Length: 284
Image 1: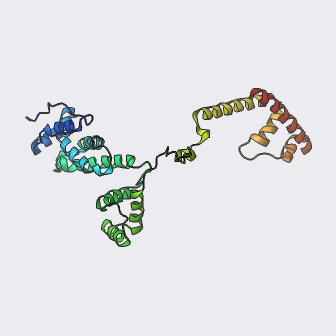
Image 2: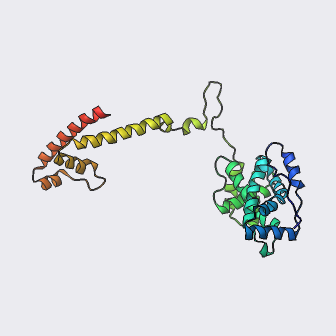
Image 3: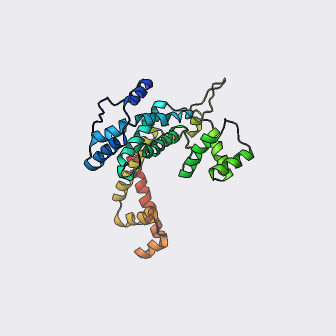
């Protein structure tokens, strides 16, 4: 094997043009070279062989990523995600199947780029299922211009993609939606109607949440201490009446248990509650 990969590994950051030039300097592999490297990696775990397979296909990633520039995402980021897919392909590639790596890798490269686009092209997910993702990319590719499609166009598109017309219409609505800034803009009166104004939950503000958790802790500890200062009968009555998660007891049930009147149980309960109230006030 005379094939060599001594050139440094390029990184798709900084000057993108320099990266692309560096990626294109790596020579293409012959079929025999590719099979040899792939066997070394699969059978011997040779990392240098895997490196050779990856570097020789960097230009493929650049080419595939260029086809997704219409989504408004940085070309460098698309390339980086595609490179992740390429490395996954190399890891799974079996040279004994008689398929060249370039054919096998395209699926993995596109899959990673698709995932990146879906994560970043909209704050709200455009497609959430595998079928919707397929429709998203097919519709994006086939739809001409930004004008809303007519009923006939929707029907033709649905037939071409093998889906229902309403699915095409729904996906078109998502595609033509516009991002809304969370902070919004301030009008002439100094007021803002941005989503952040009504999406924010004051209760989840960090200091408020911390204070609430501290209060809950103090209350739990205070209740535990207050119960500990009751006599056994009073404590059981309070626990059965107010603290049982299910099957709480009635005054009459407890009266039968202790052989006293329901009024007597009520008096014991009231006295115990008063005592606990005083202790909790000091604790919290």
